[in-house]
Length: 228
Image (cartoon, rainbow, N blue to C red):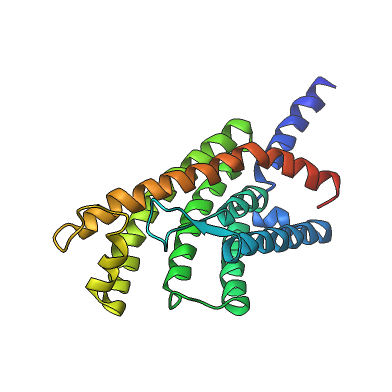
């Protein structure tokens, strides 16, 4: 019996560590149905919060809107693994364009795709190999740090330069002066990143990642109980 236990425990542990891998999730019909159902559910929830349930904060430029779509992408990432996370992000993008369209010439949506992938995929990869409660917390810390880094990079090198070229420097700076004091032609990039992008994403990233830490296990347990 002792030898049998010594043999079986590592097998169970390995299965737990690898159960978010693509190979495991598509290994049989039941797992494939579960994988597709979770992706569909989290994609739909993410779309709802991304397209409609969002709002600006008066202390930040009006185009920086708070939404909780990445909360469901993060939960989906922990629940389905890195490939599942990418599929959820891409599905959110496609559904948003088809159902609502774009008010940002697709640049806002594309930068959000980059941000969401860079946030969810490293976190889900870490959780894939450290599949326990501590690993879940650390994976959300990884997600939060990646959120801050990626948000600064995409705004500095993609979003702000694009909108300045598309709408003109004066128009874009005019939108920023109402919430960022002292911004001008010589300091606009540093001021925008320091006083808008960084604090905004500190707040939104912390809330999304913090909520994911709080609710993931509960949601995971509910899904298992109902067979999803």
